[in-house]
Length: 176
Image 1 (cartoon, helix red, strand yellow):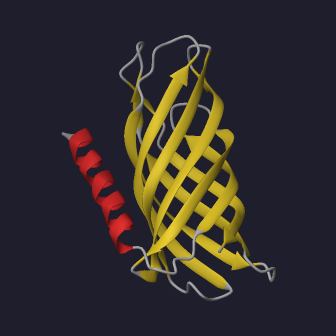
Image 2: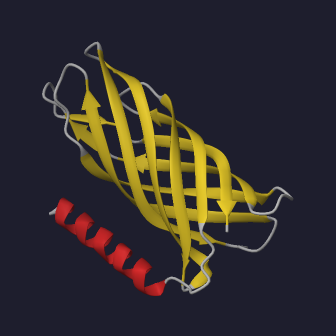
């Protein structure tokens, strides 16, 4: 039931983005470094890429991103690789200001792979806050985010591995 609900939400967000994007939409493309502090496995450093575009008004943006985290140690002398693919919304308070705080929330598909044991990929969710800062250079912004991920993955050896936890992102946005 949970998977059916999440798939419907993903389809709805994609359809809304295709039908509601503003004609002169300002696209953000960005890259970032990230640290994910997970509950049941060791925290790890990673990197990611993303894109966002406004929906109807500049205050609300559709946001999609992909991360890559590897070498989170499981308690079975195994290494876990996680690749979250996020789709969500950002709500910006001052989208045209030099400093722009925003909230973000969405759903994730979490691809999981381990070297020695079988793990299942799963769906999850996230919620957080961020800050865009214009650099004084045309088209570029610095950003930072703190978010909390909610997700469990199933393994062959035990029921669930809780990978929920805080994630911090810092990166550079190209806005055009």
